[in-house]
Image 1: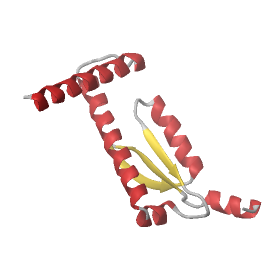
Image 2 (image 1 turned 90 degrees about the vertical axis):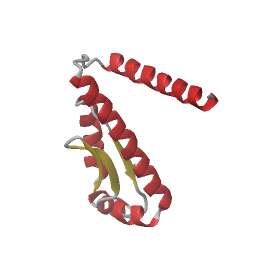
Image 3 (image 1 turned 30 degrees about the vertical axis):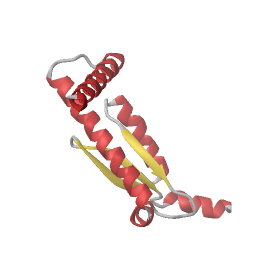
Image 4 (image 1 turned 180 degrees about the vertical axis):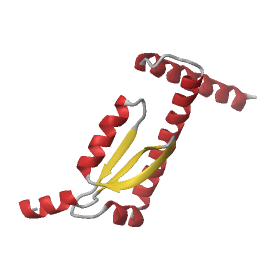
Length: 124
């Protein structure tokens, strides 16, 4: 890939960004640099984001339209982010301090509880 082609590609919307918009997980197309900035900002704001980048000058929109694997991965990222948003909002609603380690521990405890509940239900 030539330097000229690489620079041209950087200006295109060659990334697929999954991020929070007004409390909803959405995807949009952006440059890799913009996507990286949004991902970094999301961490500071107790949210999350995922970034999928493309090679060879493909735009994110084209890749998403032709690749079932990418569509599935983007859909999974949106679902996981929406679940995290819902948990964050529930913890905020119940005045749980915004301490990252505490919230990670609570999330893990809820996951363990849910998994144990499903196992019990399947044995019944």
